[in-house]
Image 1 (tube, rainbow, N blue to C red):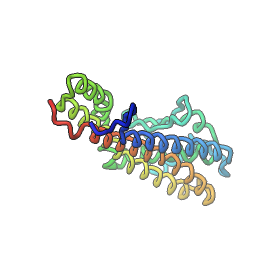
Image 2 (cartoon, one colour; image 1 turned 120 degrees about the vertical axis):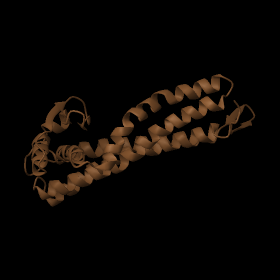
Image 3 (cartoon, one colour; image 1 turned 45 degrees about the vertical axis):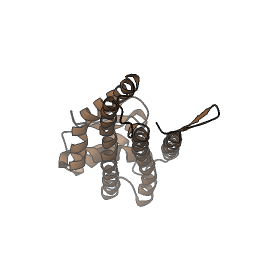
Image 4 (cartoon, rainbow, N blue to C red; image 1 turned 90 degrees about the vertical axis):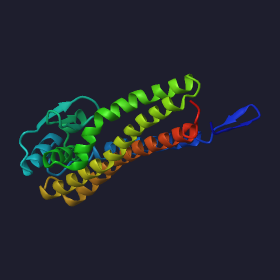
Length: 236
C-alpha cells in the first residue's frame, strides 16, 4: 500500500484526493444554493409559476402524457421516466421566480429527452440498477478483501463494481447539460422568459450543472484513490 512513515505519522498522498473532492463538492453546493436563493427573489415578467411554465413547454413539444405534480423538499425536482411524472419541489411548483421557472424547464428537458429517445438518457437509465448495486456493495467487497488478508480478487471486484457507479456519474453529465440547453432555448422560444431573464436562469442552471460535475469528479478521484491504494496489490 503506497505511503510512508515519518516518525509516528503515516503519510498517504491519496488523502489529498479526498480533500480536493470535498472542496469541489462544498463549493458546488454553496454556489447552487446561493444562486437559487438570489434568483428566487426575481419575479418573472410573465408571472407564470414553475408548474405553468412546465405545462406550456411540454405542450409546445407535443407532450401531453406527462403529469406535473408537487413534491416536498428543497430542490428535489426530478423527472421520473418510469411513470412519466414531472415532480416539482415546493420552492418551484407555485413560484413565479426566474429560478423556479428555470428549474421546471430543466426537468421538462428530461421529459423531452425521454419522449425523443435521447440515447444518453436511455443509457443512463439502463445503468441505474448496475450503478446502485455497485455503489452499495463495492465497499463491502473492498473491506472483505482487506479483512481476508488483502485478497486482491475481492478488492478488485469491489473496485470494478465501484467503476459502474463512476460510469453512471460520467454519463449523467451530457444528460444534464443537454436538458439545460433545451430548457434555455424553449424558455426563449415560448416567450415564457425575456432575454435578460433567460440570462439569469442560465446562471442558476449552470450552478446546478456544477453539482453534477462535482459528483462526477469526486467519483473519479475516489476511483483513482482506490486504484492507487490497491491496484498494485497482487496478493491473494
